[in-house]
Length: 361
Ligand code: NAD
Ligand code: GLY
Image (cartoon, rainbow, N blue to C red; front, side, top):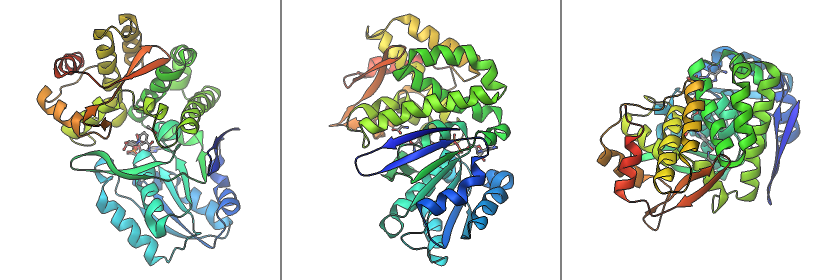
């Protein structure tokens, strides 16, 4: 078992990384959010796999459970889902102290977290991520929210969980495409902070893809620690938390213009990191070798390095809708080496167009 603690000025919580940890959910919830009722919001695919296990764990700790199976997929991460969620909590008469639990990937966690952040102005929230992407990134750090037609994650709130329960055994059933998407966020963490982790990931890729328990626990713990360190320095993204957005302004433009769910988030991040690195090379901020190394690792993982994309004018317009615009200037995170990044806000359209062309199939 490993634990990563997130220590914030107003709140402290643990991320528990342990095979079989889901069986302890009831006991953990009782300690942290004691009440007689709770709500379980669960991804439809995950309900069939782990729903009963989790309901048993909660029953054993004497919770009355309002279970709600969400409509799955990125396309369902919208305000209709949030409205349905409020109805579930109101019908079950959940109170201020009743915990709301998310079981599933980042879509479930982001939407459920937003419901927990806003229902009765905020109730205790427990994250049980079941995708690699949600374990290493989405479940940690308190960002919650939904997409709107104008763009991704444009409506949301910061709401930190009371605990995050990471059970690596759930990764055994994760489709390989989803595992690859999680690895995209792991590569992102390595590129922004940790050259040694980049090398370790490349060396241990076969063990990770074979789901070797030790390799998985090390991958999870190192990545969650990076995310925790960044969040502890800058919870509300006024400085270094922005580094976690490496590739994301490009990625969000891909997701918004290609249709949510067509290209998965981690796949869009893979393309976005490459476009950002191309831009960095063009501007003389990093060596071309960094892009070659990144392309090579993403290719080995099986992530896309090029894709059929809309025209550049459409992509540039979508980028300008992204949250990461300050004073009308597009802020972009660019690698300067493996393990280091910088932020620029003066990329012109010609440079952005050239960067997009490097990831166009
Ligand atoms: P997802 O939640 O859509 O899950 C992907 C698929 O995996 C789903 O079909 C689900 O049914 C299936 N699944 C989940 N766990 C499974 C398991 N153990 N076994 C079998 N199938 C399983 O996608 P995701 O990649 O987890 O999350 C992407 C979302 O996360 C995006 O909306 C993105 O914006 C968000 N995100 C948020 C943050 C944040 O800080 N809040 C960070 C990164 C990404
Ligand atoms: N995934 C970006 C963040 O948590 O800030």
